[in-house]
Amino acid sequence: MGINLRDKIRGALIGTAIGDSLGAPLEGGPSRRIAAADLPVGRALRWTDDTQMMLDTAGWVASGANAPEDLLRRLSDGYEAALGYGHGTKLVLMAFRSGRPWGACPFVAWPDGSQGNGACARVAPVACRHISSQAMTEQVARMSSWVTHAHPAAIAGAVIQAESVRRLLGTEPEVFATGVLLDGIEATAGQLGGWVAPAAGSVRELVSSEAPAARVRAAFRCDAPFGPGDAARGMVGRGERGRPAARVVRGSHHGRR
Image (tube, rainbow, N blue to C red; front, side, top):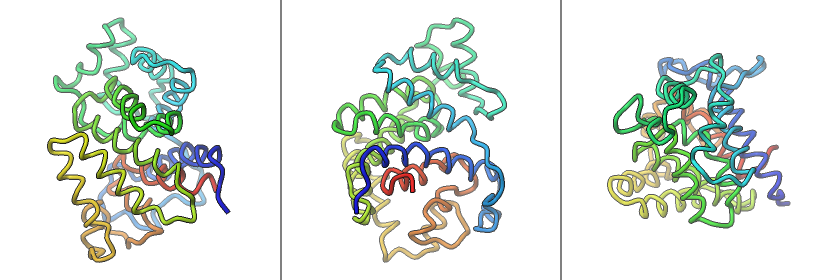
């Protein structure tokens, strides 16, 4: 039996928070620490800046606002130092609060903009809001990334993540989603062009059934055993901020269950 779209949207958003909370205690640690026993299951979990900014982004798209300045204002209003914001994002938000023109804020830390994946981690609400339009998903994902992560690499990651989630939201849970996900990654990367397309082309080979597990673990910087049910753990990697990505993909496909 399929799951309704509302439940899948909830799964995408809740999945972001779960992945964030599970990976937060491991962030920055060596890959050898990442194993099933290391995940904080059974203990109180706390989300970080990734979830807070996802909620801020959700409020932005739900309000119907489409101006980057509006999103930056929401991110600034939601800022809580205790949540562990990254150095670059913190500087962006502090610059905006101090009155610097919003268009200059993304470049206060790095002249080319941040290459981090914070925008990718918070982009799920964009896909949920614009599920019927690939063009709008890409446009708004670009905008949502640019306000804090303006480097082309960061923007490309946010666009690919958003389109992948959008495609999964439209797929029945009973259908194994790997092909849908990979199709979305490759199609979106092909449109982005440049270095992104060949980089994304290697993903299908990497996760194919023929790919040795060691190669998959190495690609995700994860020493833990890897299988279809271990995707979230694999995406945690070395505790880097890829942790919400796997859970949001799983949630958007299976719903909140």
